[in-house]
Length: 343
Image (cartoon, rainbow, N blue to C red; front, side, top):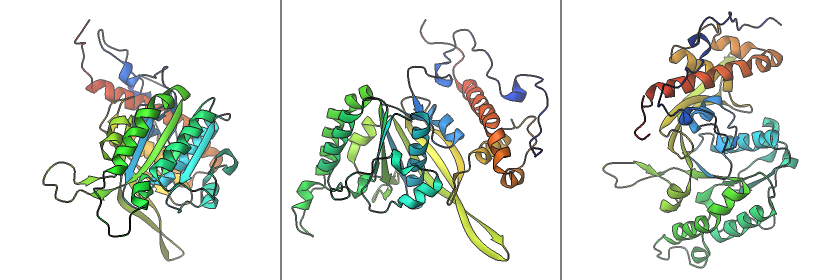
């Protein structure tokens, strides 16, 4: 099938989004590939760019969001991409909320036999359970690994389990335990190249007159030990009509990288999450390239992408994503200092 995407021969660097050579004294580390860090793809090229390459192995990543912001779906796509990139790696998913639908995840593309879902008779209930389970996983991981905790908010503590409903408590035990867990295991995560993805729910920061209006449980330890913190927000509900019947088929999500120790922080991007499919990667890339005026010779509209057959889509997706990564790096380069502070 003839592709709806039309390209012309490269005429200059900007047409294809090439990164200009670094200026003398300019540190291009922040926008270049990082050979010292391995990344797991998120399923969205724009989010990979915002994170500095994707989810970093050997680090802690925290995905935070309100209800229905594709938090679990993002974790699921991380598991799918990890299995593709590291077939010999080990993956674990711990469903603390008792809400994960394995059949739904399988329909999205997750191969269930590549993921350890834990003992159904020994579900994680407390932070202490989580610490012991994560330590065992790290000990059994002799290569690359990914461990997803969904979600931190659903965990309690042994101290809280021993109290009756309504009994007063200071509510600090969970944060203290997490701090201890990270102190003991952060270095082992790095040495074992295990990516720990922690899903968190948004809570209102009651009484806050300035600063953040929202927070999530876990205390300051999660802020300190996480290398990547991404906050998700639903900005739009997507609907369409088929045979005069109107239904919601997805949502638009804004991702804000609030902390990033492997790339430039405070980068944002938007993407559509389609129910039963996942992140619409190429559509997000095309929309962003158009927004920044760098679509260049790619003659394609959103309608073209939606009507593509699978073979055509897969054939042009790598090309579009390559351009997206190059243009993103070029844009970030333009914001970096043109000289070094130190020789």
